[in-house]
Image (cartoon, rainbow, N blue to C red):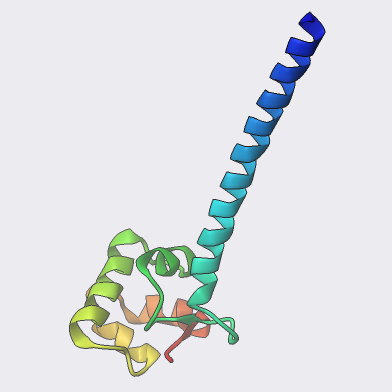
Length: 107
């Protein structure tokens, strides 16, 4: 009887553990999909559709504040017509733009 209870407890714990593991994997997969959705076939990050998290994680020298500034500028002024328009965003200079130019696109 004790062995059956221990075996049952073991099965419950295993199912809980693997359930949580699958949930964590699903969450990471969804986050990765959100980042890559801004960079479809070209392998470049579309600055007109990328969210702040994608901008921050994919670009060199772009932290949370600058990523939010890019999104805010886009919301207030409309889509970027070229990658060079990023220079209009406060905190984005020529050096930062050049470090990231090959990673960026506008669509």
